[in-house]
Length: 362
Ligand code: TXA
Ligand code: MG
Image (cartoon, rainbow, N blue to C red; front, top):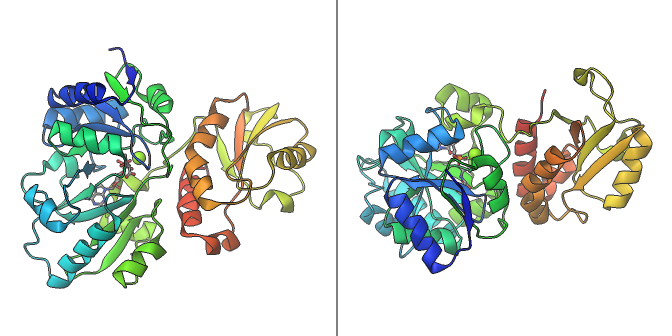
């Protein structure tokens, strides 16, 4: 199959909607990362999603909706949500979250209804739903007239794509179309929140919507589910594995660059690398390069997430920067760790730290 990148004209979005309705998959831009979209109610399309990503079936998908009004009533009329056993408090929290953060980078984990195929939820009693904040995604969902299941459009465990070209590299030959909606403005995935039947609000995955913004609106302390707890309860199953990983060996440095005397060169390569890659959090690129080259006796390919340590810019660039290093001539990639002080600056620093720790080899 030939994969085409299409400009998001009305005609092309319609072409993609037709392909989706006939059971094909489409690369869909969203504000967080690009998704690999298929019709949520077509089991054959869902099977294709798992197959094209080489994704295990125990890792559930997110349903993407385009509501007319962002409200629980509209979600209920799509048949995706039924409050059934939920307390009034829980329903109120869900309404608050939807009204404040949809469309946007918030995925809600809610009790599943019968219309949602078990394949989409990996047999769980809950379903993950979000309304993306991207005009092309919303048009595509509306023209298809169905919610779309869309995991990030990367091969399982690899770096999430934030441009149409990156999707092409991951999915070439496997899907007919990729809609080019430009580079993703957020750059890391949505924040996943579960509201329990009695109204507790849990964070299952950190993402581009910082928890403090959610806490301010819900007036509730959000409980973070630790990796251990997740493992026990399988709360967000897909998140247990090594994720977001470059193809080249990627290690986190023990300390920030300024506090190192040498850049360690990895023994797993057998011989010392001629060129290393460095993913730095901040600083002038030229200064970071000079510093790194002085410490490492060889060439260094540097990517700086944000020269001015602007966390929005850093998250937007994270995956693209990792991809550039992965495609460069370096043989091994080192990442600057996110420090405690950085974590205090912004909730986004947590989301970035989570991604690079999962991507790194231990
Ligand atoms: O920003 C995003 O969320 C992107 C864009 C494309 O919308 N999508 C995305 O999908 O990141 P994906 O498949 O890469 O990650 C979805 C994760 C799963 O790995 C799983 O951990 C969690 O969502 N998930 C899905 N359904 C769940 C459920 N019922 N309960 C708990 N976690 C769930
Ligand atoms: Mg993913």
